[in-house]
Length: 368
Image (cartoon, rainbow, N blue to C red; front, side):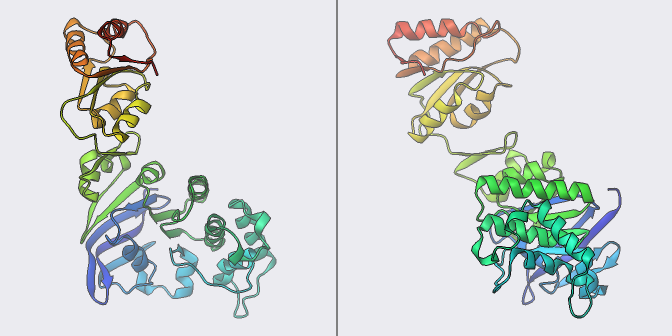
């Protein structure tokens, strides 16, 4: 893992001499999984296609395993690199096994006849992606999720050291997204394969990748570990978000809070009990306040984004008189109070006193 396997040095890429992304300088280690994220049209696919030699590099250099990309013959490169692009392949009268078998062509003779060893590798690749049961089905008649698995099997069949994938989870439902990425990461770890993939789903990129490349406009915006890259302000600037939020801790995208600075509803919550209520109020565009929460509370992670006011206490401390009085005053100023039925313990016992005040005020909505 310590050796640089792929180096992009002062790379300028684009179409017809027009630079889309400029001066890319990145060193990628053997066996790393790299995810590229960024807005549509930012240049992620352009970078991948340039590394794959589908596009001519405008200037700069790419080194694969210490050797300049341009010094590889196409056959040599196909034994080093496998590519899965978003372009749908068009085939006629080919089974899934036939498609996977094309991954062995760099190793066959002029006639493209597969040896017994090649056939075994095709079988193993199909088994790796859990597609042995569709091996003899017509490729054009299977689902999008199955097609992505077959294309991944073809890439595995090449025995590559580097796999490039452009939006491999596009058009897939949640189950198949998770399945594909799980197969990819396990295979990459087991065989020490370097993987570079572009992803629209930033929550998946955060969970899958060792390092993240963020591409914005004409440059590489950030390059680092998920912890370094997935900060609220970084993601906000990358995607120019002005109508919602991104929570880097859980990888959640949240819509903007309800309009209005004065809360109409107060939610007594804690321990995650308030989350579904917060979302309901946000969807109904009802400004709300909530408390008394601790900053290490699940409810706080969402409340800080969606609530107009959040009353908090220091983590692991009992609720003080000052915090209780602030919460009570704000709660009683609201038109309605909701008890989210939070779990009670020694340190948040005074929420019961808030509930008693809520009942006495006549503003308490039926408990959730």
